[in-house]
Image (cartoon, rainbow, N blue to C red; front, side, top):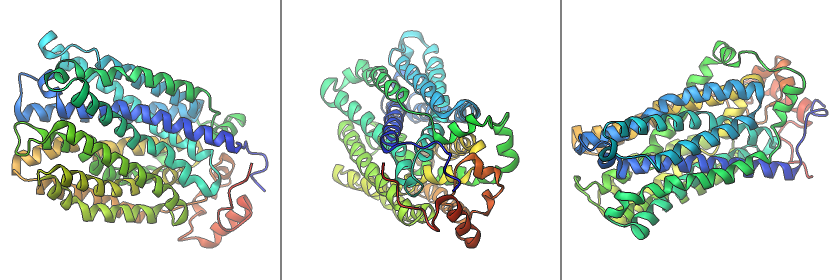
Length: 476
């Protein structure tokens, strides 16, 4: 059987990889969400004071989006070197870059201190965050999926996905603690907002230790041992797989646009803005976002198992249909002005976010061949984040200002989710496909299609896994 000579990980090693990916992505996204929430709460006053009002808030949210424009750069760099030098090294580098940028934001002087240099430096550090985030995800999910047993790729790939809601939960919890307990009122604006950024340096230290302790992906070990790294993996990716990149980018754009209503600070700002119509309690809304993060995390966890039980595509479709049903009720709940209804609306909405996010790691990894896989998943993810999440809070804020209703925001989200659903239905679910470089070199990668080429797919499963369906997980 073709799996005989491939590098294999023990159950303990696989669990260590899963732990390292979830710890690392949690730290990365804690840093990212701290910024997004702070942009919704205080950056308008601290860094864009001369503008003020709705325009000042739009500019603050634009700094959230600007970093997304640099995600493809991070994805290109990490994808290129991840396919040439290894997944593990790139994960360590991106973690350090994100942590340094976030910590420096915590000591950055405000506009009142140094004038226009304050927003300039803020945007520069945000760009560094974007480069780091663009490269982080691809390496993390491939470490998890490529190390997993063939029939458990969905659940192993779910672990780095969990780092996103965990990062959001940690970010909102720390901000809520600072805003409501340690530095309430003006103290939060004066110094309390800085503490969550400064805590990043501690989290990065923990993440660095954990990530340094894991083994390299077995797929890359095989590529490296055979000297089969591509000289220009990015060029080959766009030459042979550009359609897949576009489709997968649009799939992620739907989830990203929908998710950034909560994670990007829009609802936080909309519901607490002292110039708005709701003027709800800041700490209360932060707690509501934290509860939504818990639900999002639970749904993501469940969806990893669902992806193995019913397939990646089917799980995605359920998630999209859930979001389609919820994009209008979400703002009905929020506009009630009642904390209980706002919390309930975000929590129900978050179920769809998890169902359309958990299967992503396994599905994207199984879509691209081994030699360009890091480049493929990283670029698809980065482009999707630009199309979907980069300016979603900015667009939502502008739509409310223009039409004076959140109905326009719901319509915007509906369009994004429907496009993602259409792309999902076009793509193939290739659950169980061999991920190694040897299989890619057989020329049979395109023949593996359970829906359109069942006979060829069964033959490949028998040759590589010994059964027509993914085998039971090996017991170490």
